[in-house]
Image 1 (cartoon, rainbow, N blue to C red):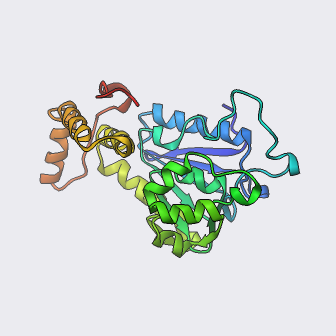
Image 2: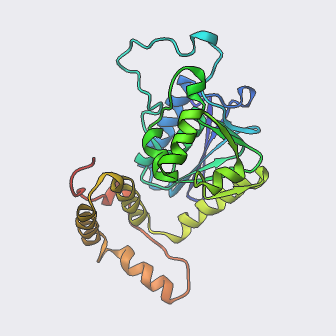
Image 3: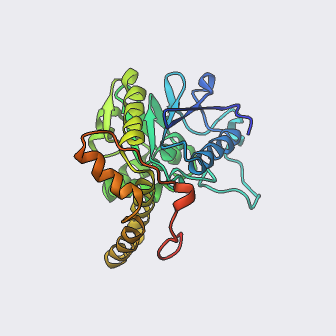
Length: 272
């Protein structure tokens, strides 16, 4: 795809997806959604990608839907292709860790899409809010599912039902992110974490654990144990399970060779 509204870079096993419309504070458009989804699929399919960082250009991550159409922004959608999910490929479908580096404001869809990532680092200076109810629509991008898992029912209700905005330190304190940092430190910290994944972890192990982690919210406890057991059988005895122990005992970085694309298991219970 010809990327116009995002940038894609790959170095040392880390893919960096940058929302690249600073003149509109990276407001989300249909074109951006198509490119962003394509980049996620590219990361999932490419074994050279070990971790993904998503960030924004300029002083904002994403301030939500592009309002350039004025009062027609949220016009009635008759197309059967319309989905409130916004991205055809959400971050949890990428079999690599996806780290959101919220370098500045994340408002509305900008924040609900970040909630789909595995890990979030955010700027203390930023403002964060799910403001759709103040625009006459409602929260989107699966946020009624993702947000409650992160912060609990009452805090999710506060954010979803009032549209209030909070600062970076409060957002981290309630569980919206793992850390709040000065804006200039957010992307470097996210890239450092991604490089740690790329050099220290077994790619197939990470991919399998991520898929089960996201599924576990809707699974009974006994089913989680059953799937963990089946997936252990797939991983144990492979070269990476030998290399991981040897590297630890020899006090060196591991040289993992497993392939997410080539060695993916038949998933217990199906790929739900």
